[in-house]
Length: 81
Image (cartoon, rainbow, N blue to C red; front, top):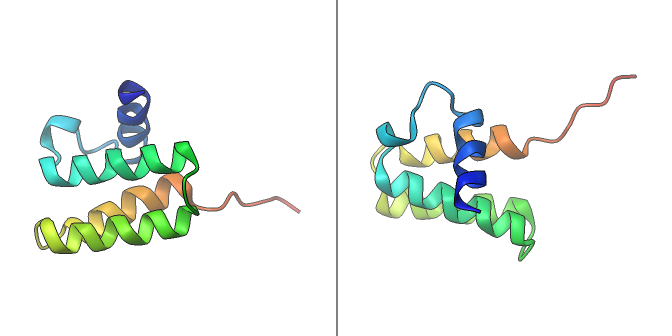
């Protein structure tokens, strides 16, 4: 499961190798993606909570980084008309 989650993060943030991502940010991303995969709450709620945790425990840029990565992964699919 962890390798699947890490591949998802790498795909969403290709310019950020996992070893370069702040450890707190990486833990928040992993946990949020796991929660979405388990379907324990709506995606929006999980993303909002992850961003709030990043604001509290991460660096100055953590919340925007976490929001950006999760937004890239879970953005609504656009339909072609």
